[in-house]
Image (cartoon, rainbow, N blue to C red; front, side, top):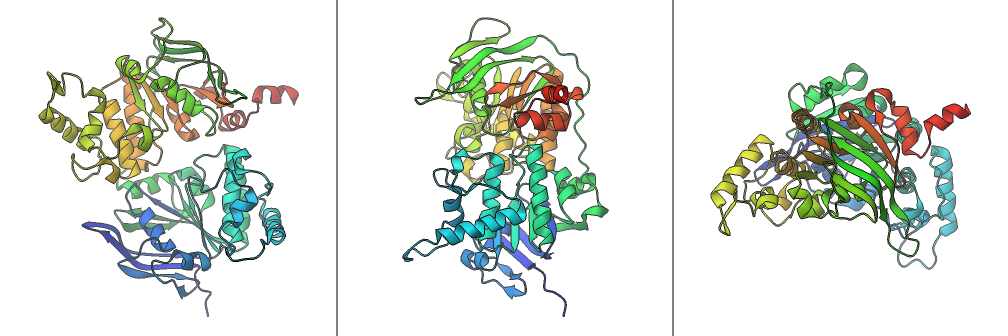
Length: 512
């Protein structure tokens, strides 16, 4: 008798009202295999994973784990059957230890004593076997991003996961951390673990997976061996058309538009550590300046300065080489700065307001949308209808509350509001976070078009491929300090990775 597949999804369908999210999806995953699951935003990947975990109940179809059918709508049954997940945004408690996070929820509340020693021994065995070394007594808040991901993997393995779903697992990792993660995954797979790898990074999909399944509009449209396909073919399968790579082209940089000169931002608390330390950068016409770095090294504070949400504690901020600016949101908008923020839920949009109200939020007082204090609703409606069509924002009409949109469509809404005004200075903070290949290509084209017409762009991104494709110059942010600007043509992926982890390649080469 042939060995049972690790996972078998058969004819899974799920509708939400008129929307058919999953349409007769059948997939098989074998033990000791990495299956990459690709698809546009809204293609049905999240719905399918929620059905697998029991968070949703399918309208039809079945889920089998090693030949045993899972009861629908029961998350505990999925976990007991050996399904684990490593989320893109870590689900860890910062104030607890590694040990406490891993064992949380695994012991009965009625237990007379905690089995701490046995837990430590099991964690130590898993860590040694799979190269996931981490101090079980360390607090989560004191760990690096890469170490936190190890804890997430250990948490799944501690629960005896035989199938591991990884959702955008490399989104916040440096290149060396990605290499370490893939080494661990290869070890796990050789031991028989089955992995579903969800990612928008096709280069990594090609490296780590054996097979690829592509979802489009809720259906499986392609299922191929990774060795038999290319990144270009996968991208085309995801969006249903050829996706050209962005072409930056040569442009001579113009005059400086915006400058930070020796800027500090102080932290809170008694220690008063500097969140930004002696930052200097210059955004010029016809130029994209990229900022690389692992999340948490000062990117948010840098973006907040440009948005006007924070003021510097020392140093000078200049626009057009003039004065010393004390930023505020109103001043930055008036100065022609377009703000594409990372936190689209908290800062970029107001969830309970409509699509129209959010699109017009930064201009609602102008004569374009107001006349003697009265709203010009017809102008607002016309603008909103045009923008959601131009930027392919998929929503239930211009009066729909923004909270009903997917994350990707929320990001498109912000891009529509900002780029349609043709600002001369653009902050693009994680502009393609959570976007699919087609939407990402569109955003890249829009930023390059802004560069072409003379805008200066500050691109803050944790996607090194994105930075290398779009940036004219790149600076690396580490522990609140910026490296010197490097011409993109003269920097390598390895050098960026070293700088992102706090090493100086120049000193290393001299020492060698």
